[in-house]
Length: 510
Ligand SMILES: NC(=O)C1=CN([C@@H]2O[C@H](COP(=O)(O)OP(=O)(O)OC[C@H]3O[C@@H](n4cnc5c(N)ncnc54)[C@H](OP(=O)(O)O)[C@@H]3O)[C@@H](O)[C@H]2O)[C@@H](O)CC1
Ligand SMILES: [K+]
Image 1 (cartoon, rainbow, N blue to C red):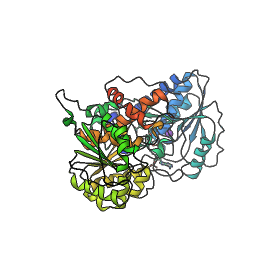
Image 2: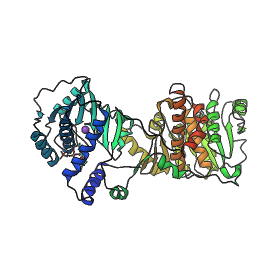
Image 3: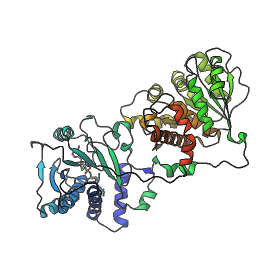
Image 4: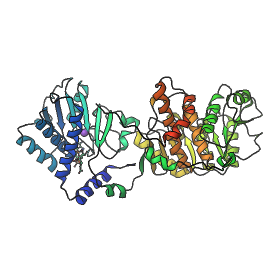
């Protein structure tokens, strides 16, 4: 599913108006009507008090249509117009007149007004700014936003919480409406998924406002939300007359004294994701642990007790997964260097492998094209340096991906796969997966798909999705706290099967 930028959204709105031969006013009326129908359905009775804060642009216009329809249905409605500028849109002005025709006179808030106190039992609608916000809020509007945030009332933002830009994070992180819920229109926005911005969204509902399907189809996107329907076509069937050689031989390399379990987790995860054959390479101290914990794996040890080397490797694997628990000393570095030099196929580099790339930048140039890096935030800082906000972080990842021809898997609540200029935002996973070993499992999952000759980008996207889905299935049974990395491995099979099952309908919000 495509995620569009602001200009593209405006363009799709415009094309909708043209192709459906409607006016901007009619589109706004449709938007307000859908908003009203949704809100009215959530509320138990028209006794509910609803307080709307409307800006003077089209987001405010949407709010005014909603206010009128709520009023006509018999709700107790108060409207505050946030008079932040002279540039009032037609949609705002027309709907202000219509509200007055219905005998509702809004209160105009400007620089020197007192801000209204809100009651806990009131619902606040934030229609101050939508996607048109281009610069920081003026001081008094910022104060109003902070005032609203301090109140106990439940806040529903229209389209986006006011104060959030679509492409950068505001300087003042308190001058953003902290919504309990956001109702947006048909198209996903990147801010719904970034850690820095998503926390202002609360719950999320997209309303279908009948935008022109062809305009959406023709509009080129570089950001994608990966739902089940998007990843299902990536899945490749296993052939009836295949054998283990058909599904690749993966080499998982890592581990050190006290950190052998991570190699065991990656190896098991790879086996549960369908790799044909798997060999683990660990320091000699890991011999018994691995042979016992993963009997399906073959094992090669280094000829050092506690550190890695490639002395005993006498075959060329189809795919190498390097890094978990490997350490960043000289032996680990030489091991990685040897493996890179011996392989032509894209690799997967995780954890200490990424730390080694940061420590020895010359290694990056030697990586096979489309190698996949799976950093957590700390490892990413070591690799890229710091960033100003989440948008800057993504830009830096894109540049790194383009320059070095690698794929970056940015792990988080919504893991994002970065491949050159494109971003793929994952939709599965849950807070229970923030637990030791979860990343090692992901490395094993993606490695197994690579070994089965999935294209590296497809392996990353599908692997991230399945890993998150397995975690979601575990959480459904056991909750978040009890979830451990081994559970994710155990549910990989169910995650695959779920690709082919009907989705359950989402529960109602509010
Ligand atoms: N397009 C459509 O057809 C549809 C749109 N829809 C709705 O319209 C919303 C977008 O409406 P919008 O473009 O009028 O912008 P909005 O967010 O209301 O802001 C108002 C104006 O404020 C200005 N401004 C910016 N920053 C500022 C600041 N710090 N302090 C003061 N002023 C500032 C800026 O003007 P500028 O200064 O750039 O000239 C901006 O234009 C969208 O979110 C959705 O709710 C839906 O109805 C579907 C159909
Ligand atoms: K808003």
